[in-house]
Amino acid sequence: MLVGGYLVAVSGEVIADQSDMGQSILGASLVALATRLPGLSTTYSAVRLGACRMAASNVLGAHRRVCLAGLAVF
Image (cartoon, rainbow, N blue to C red; front, top):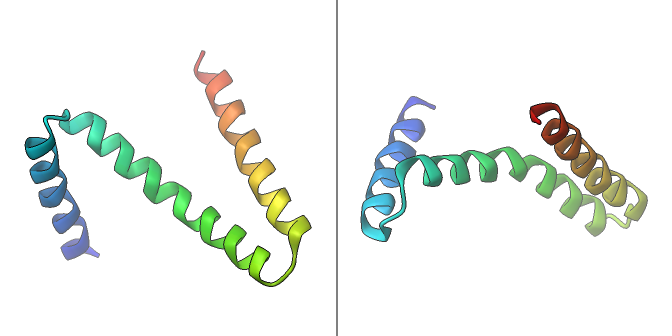
């Protein structure tokens, strides 16, 4: 876990420097991607198993949480 975190940090710095993106923008994008991967894999697995209701509920539930979190900030 520690080695993986270190490698992500070092890789993020290199990508930010080479692409002229800010480190904070790239870091926020990587965190957003990392927090979405479990939901994405769950939805993908549900679709492969034919559980379309579960997949739709997962997508709609995740979207609702994001919207409510956004409203709480403003």
